[in-house]
Length: 447
Length: 155
Image 1: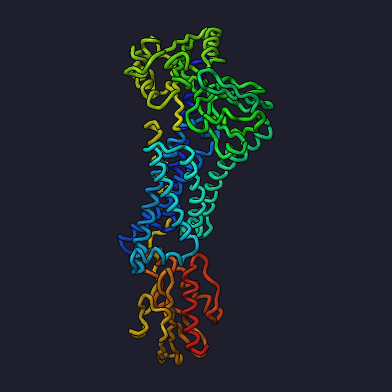
Image 2 (image 1 turned 180 degrees about the horizontal axis):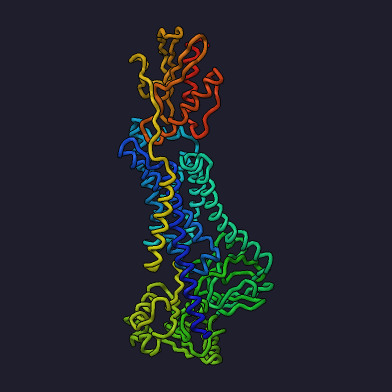
């Protein structure tokens, strides 16, 4: 079997998995609704009763979406390897908006219909429902927290809030979920009786929360123990970027591939609360990993002050920006500025049919330039450096195009790493040159 | 997702919900409520507990039996009022004058819970019976009203 055939089979398999995960969301929602229907949810004394039923369905689907969201950002390998980290985060966000709207529909309809049945005003009903148990005011408070999180997430995108501040607010979600879940089991009529529906929901929550705890908490701690990863060297380069080399035991068992990234958490007093996504800037070695960071946010700048010996907690490896996504035998690696880091790592294993296109303002500001040039020469890869101020497209004022640089680009994989707007421009150019959507690979760091 | 797979998934979802429908009860169970014995005892939301239980006696073929209404008890799930029929010091029947709200869920729960409570009371001859599972609002409210009816009847 040729390599290209193997790529095609792998791509098809990933396609099945990805569709399977998406289908699972719909099917699980259908089972939730089916339990509601089976318990007599469609029975009504008057047509208007169906509005109450609709409110219950909205709550059920919202719960399924929240469960999907938890699973999507649990960093479980069955999500990361199949969907990719960036797409999982994007879907997580899209589901979040829908889930929030459904929560509002759920609360609005249940409240309005209960008020109608009980002959109270909606305001009076809001507090009257507290008689049902502590879990009702808890759920109401949880909804308030969800509203804060959704609002700040929207504001954060618009006004480019600092990641650290947005993240702190986003942590409220844990509290919101903890407040909201009990009412589903203690009040949710379909689930109260402890039958099959109850076990179904318990299993779903256990799976989603279990994945989250296992892959975001337990596994990183276990890796810390297994590899004993520590900062070994911090080196600042002439262009202003900083390389951090970390040493540990048996790092090949992490299974990281060149081009992938990990979430790094440096366990010292100032930095342990924050995890940052940075790509490996060199193929992983059994005893060492290296990242290269350009100062942009506060944290990137603070990497310089890292003490040698600091323990490092990692989550990952993450993302499908690597050989695993290959669909064709040739490839073009397009990077902008510090976006060269995953490309630099991929060059360690690249074969000659690779072309590296690197967009930099000037050679003096190009991180790891010596290494990239030496490696490209050694591996027989073509290196094209586009140097100069910004032009009309993604290139310089000369207006370069992918097809102009690599005439057979349509038959190759195109990997793009750089700022979102710039990468969008490269992607548009690649599509215009006839590169299939499935052959364009990007890792979008939203922050 | 590709078109053919999307159709497959949509069909699967429809089949699952359809199975739920097949397994569901097709008619709302009904609970026969008895008419309030006097306007004073009729359910007015918020009247908790009504202090005027009414007593009426009817001469039947097998001897005298009397009915006693408990107070109206209100909670988050609506109003509840019980009526007992007593003959020769024995409770011979338990009925509901008011039970919950017209909401389909409430109707469904009460249609099961009230007859269950009735059977328990008739068997044990006391108002103090165990709550029916799945009816955590009906049970205490209805037994509370029953207690009033039992006291009124001197049982």
